[in-house]
Image (cartoon, rainbow, N blue to C red; front, side, top):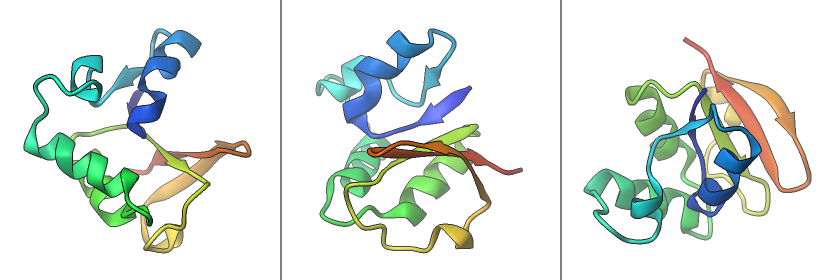
Length: 100
């Protein structure tokens, strides 16, 4: 799957399953070659409130299959407004499939 996730997960997701492809590489996570789009993603995830619309739009445009949203912060939009289907969740994250 092609995944959009919080940069804090970048080092762990590929260890969990090597078939997972992330929207960004480790270099971007650690500050090397950060693009304007990556800054937008980091801003959307790292603020006090998660900017779901920004994350969703970038993920959809990039043709990502899945979206991972942290559960420790409020989200600025209702999940129901987007073409997302909950796949699973734990105490820290919710995993959604992006519907076509």
